[in-house]
Length: 444
Ligand code: SF4
Ligand code: SF4
Image (cartoon, rainbow, N blue to C red; front, top):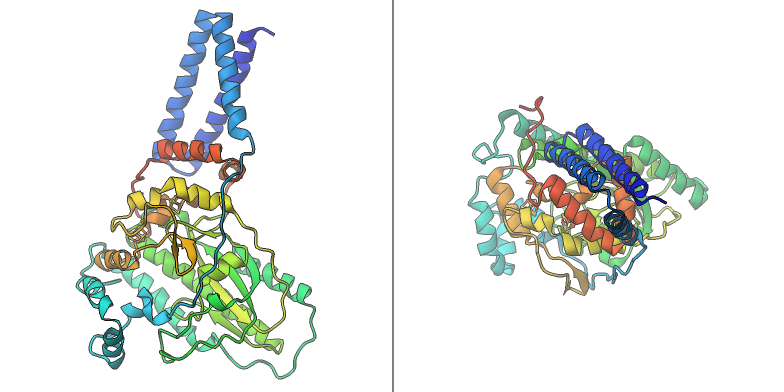
């Protein structure tokens, strides 16, 4: 066949891909990516015009063969991602987590006792205590309406507290685990969950000691055998303006949504005659990302958050534990996500407090993972007054879950080589350190 006809077909295909990319970028309001798409269309047109003008069979042949080899190699299933799923050796004491330390009242008995037992944490925590604090009017991202709106959502979440647990109906329903599990999962999706999974609880899922609320210092009751974990999506426009007020409004809103669903499911299970507890914001007895991972919702990424295939880290999690017998989901290990994290490091590059490691995963308490510096991260939160979220904003897995990005994720799961290509394209189209978008107009 005439080499120029093949050149025309290949360039035509490239133009189609670029036009589709352009359309999606317009639809997603990605200014920089729109410009890059337009420029790439111009580049292809120029190359095609030059080849047409030269009209030399050998040059066309070299162009055609190189381009074909390049794309065929990218699409080859090369899946040596490497994966070493490890589990923690011991439980975490919730009192030592950042969220428990932040609510310690200076001068209180709890405060004095905690720092007497953990003097090494005093200098670390003094740093965040020297800053204005979350949702504080002195914080640098203070927004008079947005901060109050977020506060109102946290207020509402707090009202759910009495309903996280309760007495089950004395009359037990006789149920098949498959039917009730399917019902709960479908209902959770109907209520707004994006991903739902069920797993059997392991010792390492639970905190050892309660670190917040009235039961502070008590040993965690780990009698439940099963967990239903689910995620709810955070609105992309609200996340895209991180670290301004919209991020904390959205975090609070989705904690509220996930909390509501968890309360409904827990109450439903109790009405069937079984024990159930909702684990919602500020009221956890276990480590949600670990449960989510084992329930098949995703893998834990470089920034320490659970990353799933639909929303990346752009979600909030909640869990319901129960003694009702449930059908567990097979964990769908996705080593591709971890491998992508090992080469990407975009969140680490953008983090204003250098809290995210740029190194390889390390063994910490028996688990191979990335360790985030939660003190540095939280100190930044206390400075800006929001929960920052810039790492979530820039993550290539946070793009919308539409057909275009689904295709890219499919190819990312298929090939190590494609991962390098996709990362480079993400850097070119969106920037290595993408700037925050404007806070949605209605917020301002
Ligand atoms: S930004 Fe990159 S390195 Fe960070 S969590 Fe997302 S994929 Fe992983
Ligand atoms: S929330 Fe902000 S400060 Fe914390 S790890 Fe992410 S980018 Fe860094």
